[in-house]
Picture 1 (cartoon, rainbow, N blue to C red):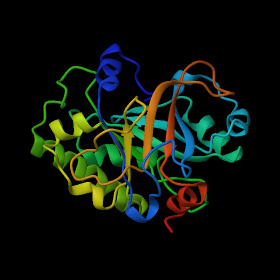
Picture 2 (cartoon, helix red, strand yellow):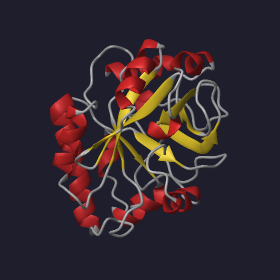
Picture 3 (cartoon, one colour):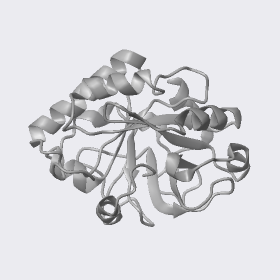
Length: 250
């Protein structure tokens, strides 16, 4: 993802088999080659200043934008990206990079909701995403938590975000991390859209219990007019009308 760019994270992410899921009613297709997929990006401060009008004119229809990390970091480019993408007609959502070993899930969900991750029914604001993946810092791949501890942390985050916003958060993860660090937990997938991270030509296996992906981050080296350098490219598993339906919770 377009967050902390450590060599460890790239090594972990590149070989992962991952994916994303939403409620079945919001899903239309099984892969990016199918007709009803919608192109998007995810960005952070690493993309620098972005010309969102050029991005939209290049055919990009949605963007996840880094808002927060842990309990005290807010991406310095978030405010500009969040407003300017909206004004350019891009359907936008915030994302939070999880650090489960530094605070409770509820603390980080509240931090996200208070710093850009809130939601409004305006046809262009998606529910925010929880970015949970291999730990790029000290503390172990699974942040030092047991599978039960990780499940409890994620559930605490999801419950708190829903209580703050009325929406089910999107979950960004990889199949290998999810299955290892949560013990192949199936609980969230009945309600929470799954955002797959697998840099490949196919989605591959989904996390345990996930029947379908909603978003798929399929490369970290994409190119888009209006963005300098590499950018993560994504697909929504449906057409724009269904993406707007997810944005509006309809």
